[in-house]
Length: 331
Image (cartoon, rainbow, N blue to C red; front, side):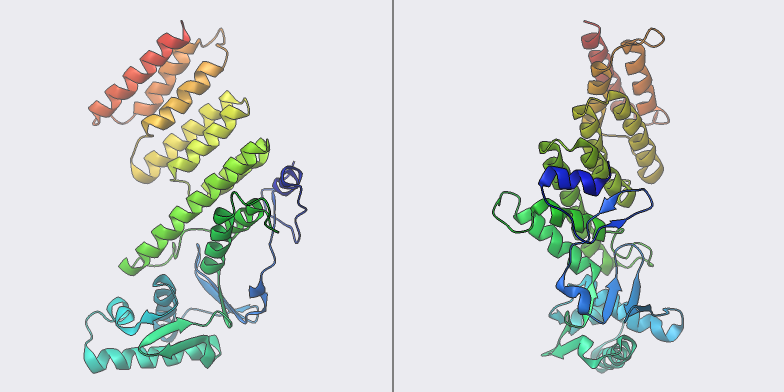
C-alpha cells in the first residue's frame, strides 16, 4: 500500500494533487495561496531561486554577495530584520558609512536579481522579504508544521492535522542551507527547523499508529531518516513502529542501521533507550535452534560496543544491560 492510500484509509480524507516519489510513495501536495508568487526560494537542502518557473544561475562573483544577503535575511527571520544584524553577518569588519554603503549596493543588486523592487521592503532601518512576491520553502514548511501540530486535538478542523504534517514532511527536503559554505548565522535557523521537523515526523507517526496505519507510519519514519539520518529519535520511532506491528527482526535491522549511521556520522554509539528497544525485539522473537536468544543478545551487544574500546564505562553499562536481558529472556 502506498503512503498516500494508507493515509486516506486511516484519515477518511482523500488527498488532492498527489505526486509520486522514486521510492513509490505517494505524498499529498496541499494547495496553498503561495502558488501565484513569482519568486520561489528553496533553502531546505539545496539552495536555489526560481523566477517565473526558471531557475536563476547562481554562478559568478557578481551574484554571490546578493544571494548571501538573501540567505542571511531568511536565516534571520525574513521579516523586520535590523540592518545592523545583516552588517554583522556579511560585513563584520565594516563600520559606519561603509557598512551602510555595502548594504545599499547589495540590496539594489538583489532586487534586480529577483526582478522586482517590491521583493524586499526597507523601512525604518529594517528589511522584510515580501511574501506576496517571494515564496520560501522554509516558511511554507513552518506554516504547515505549526498548523498540523497546533490542531492535533481539534477534530472539527477542515483539514486534518495529519494532512498538514504530511505536507510539512514533503516540504522538508533537507537541513537549512545544508549544502552551502557554513556560516555561524545559519546555525540557529537550521537547528530550529531541524527540531520542528523531528516533531512533525514523530507527531505524524504517532497519529498513524493510533489509526492502525503501521505501514504508513513506518514509511513516514523512513522518509524522515532519508532527510535526517543522524537523528536517533527518528531511528527509535522506526524501531517502535516495527515492534508495535510485530516485526522484531526489522527492529534488529533498524538498530544495526542506526548504529552504523551514528558511528559514521558522529562517532557515537546508540543510547541506552535505543539498546532497550533492541533487547525488546530480541525478547519478542522466538529463539532459533541455530542462534538462541542469549547468542542473539550477545551479538547485539558486540555490535553495540565494536570499535568503542576507548569508552569503557559506556561499554560496561551496555554489557550489563544485555546480560540482564539475556537472563530475563532465558527465564
